View 1 (cartoon, rainbow, N blue to C red):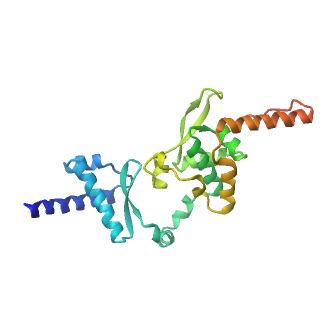
View 2 (cartoon, rainbow, N blue to C red):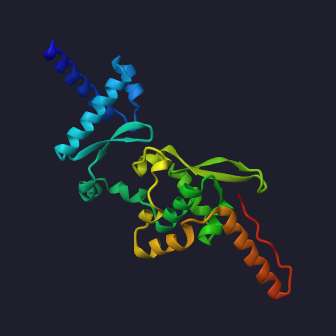
View 3 (cartoon, rainbow, N blue to C red):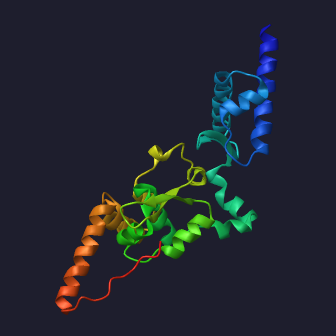
Length: 224
C-alpha cells in the first residue's frame, strides 16, 4: 500500500510539473487540484515539496508562489545566460523613469497622474501610458475629489514580474533603484511622503511664486 501511495504521489508531481510548464500564468493550488481530482491541501503540500526539491538540487529553474498561484521561473543565477538567449528581453526592461513612476504608483495606489507628477516633479503621462501598455499598471477608477481624474494602480502582472504574493510583500522602496543616484532620489522624494502632503506643498510653492511675480499667472491643467 505504501508503494502505491508513493507511486501516486510521484504521478501527481509529474502532472503538476507538466501543467505548470504549459501555463504562462500563475496557477492556484485549487485550480490544479480540480484538474487532478485531489484535495487542495494535498496539492499545496506537493507544490511546496517540489519547490524545496528544486532549491536543494540547485536547478536552473525555481517554483515560486506568486500573485495567488504557482509558477516556474528561471533561476536568477542564470539571468545573464537567459538574457543573452532571449534578445527580446531588452525591450521589456524598465527605464529609471519607469521604475520611479512604478514605485510611486505601487506605494501610493490608487493615485492620479497629478499625484505622480507632484512626487516625481516631472510630467509622467508618457511613462504611465507605457506602464499601462506593458500591463504593469491599470486604471483603477476616478478620484471624486479631483475632477474625476483617472487613478492608477498596479496589476497582477506587476506582482508576477517582481515575484510578490501580494502588495503586502513590497520591499523597501530603495530596492527598486538601479543605482545610487536613484536610491538618493527615492530617499528624498518617495519614502514616507503622502500624496496629499506633496500636492499641498506643490500648490503652496506655486502660490508663493505667483505672488512674488505679482501676477495671477495661468494655472497648469492636468490631462488625466
